[in-house]
Image: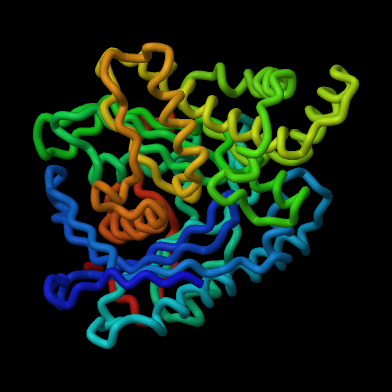
Length: 427
């Protein structure tokens, strides 16, 4: 378990600043991220400046059997209502334990009574933005969290956006805008989790809350295929710095087949989102078999991993270039800010840096760096965002961006699961 104490006793917010907890476990299933943050913003003013400070964070492990159950559910393996219900309860208990682990390690000068709410994303087991009707499913029983911790929980954030005709994803662009927009630079925020998603942030001319021109969507696979393949072949949870991938070579025939089999998604215009429902080991295995039949020779496992690394970097950078070319509000990209587990993969990051700057994409060089360089934790970005969404919901403020998700309107997101001590007012 990883702990990160960011509390500074000399400049911590005053004792009245509300605290929120954000909880996130993504498609990569690499752990449960839990963050405690103080959040200041004048809810009545749309032009107010957000002040969010990460105070303490932990990464809590996901048991292997729970991880395997989630993967099974996300790849169309046969299941039952009973199995889904049991996993929902087990995930609720897992999130409770993770939050309690953080609470037990807080510095004594932090009054836990200041915690207004927990923003819990839950574990996505199915995301279906292109069916009729649209739906998404995140498991992790929030009632169990409230009952054991007696802290109000806000959860089920994506469903309202989908009920309004949106993709339900990505939800972070508004948060990226508040923390990382710049008056001079055009920036993009790239989150590399199991699935990779991008937010394009046009320059801002002032400190207002205008969000016109922001683009956000899933670019395709992030870590999901690379993690799945190395786990299948070597029993590892991830490819450290892409070292195994870099020991192999790109198989062009395999790469071409991978691209061909995902063109339907890649050619689609935003708003769009995807998940493990498309990019999974069953999908990959079918393509591997077809490739071996075509070439009449077996594929080396390290070459497969290298080709998957190439696929992730290529889909990310080509999708960025494509959407930038069609955006009349921006004529260049100045800085690409990375977050998520994949931002720690040195091999992947270097490949992205090379690809985003090749082919004379633009006259100036795109700076590629982690969001940490801008003062925002690259590993806790999503958990921080859901702490912020809990803050927004508790103050009756919308969190989605219809220009990103395709929803018919902005909306307050999530369901509130009140604690027994909750009052009618919120901070």
